[in-house]
Amino acid sequence: MKRALVTGGSGQIGAAICRQLAQEHLHVIVHAYRNRAAAEEVTNQIMEVGGSASVACFDVSDAQATQRALAQILEAGPIQVLVNNAGIYDDAPMAGMRADQWNHVIAVSLGGFFNVTQPLLLPMIGTRWGRIITISSVSALLGNRGQTNYAAAKAGLHGASKSLAQEVASRGVTVNVVALGFIKSRMVERSCKPEKIEALVPMKRAGTPQEVAYLVGFLASDRADYISGQVIGLNGGMA
Image (cartoon, rainbow, N blue to C red; front, side, top):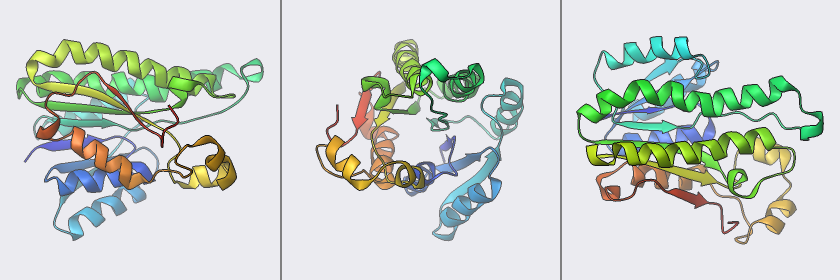
């Protein structure tokens, strides 16, 4: 059975991705940082319907802690599907943004991509089959007021993923990015009124975590063998 690691798997979007990958007959490692209980809940949901899952907890922005955690995970074999979903936001106009706001967002989203992906590459390449899927944002494509840190981190993921895709293409490993628009979540419900979403999104609605999961599940499958180095928008026509 192939194994998948989903960082940020305890959140709403991550949980939907975890459940979908389990339905695709992967053993799913549900990652969390502080909220282990939520990761355990997702794991239990998967196992209750006959899937295979386990929990891993570590801070993706901490290189040494990540290396230790991944070393333990790799003792059981390579990870062949990696979904880089962990990320944070800390919005402020750049003129008033603190250095720690900039650095922390970059460290989690972009630093976390390196810290998690790099140690998994050689074991993945050794199997001659792999999928690396990174969750990004339409903010990286369009920009967004108050999100210079977030947009910079996500845009960096696009360049890193396109470059990595070229490095591993001959080894049976694909690397793609899914750039999300408004997706239904507690965060979106708190920050965006329905009329704002209707005004900004041509489809007049937010997407769902399950719609994200369907796309990730496809990219993680054999059906997506010839798709690599792409930034795929899931945003209701915003870009």
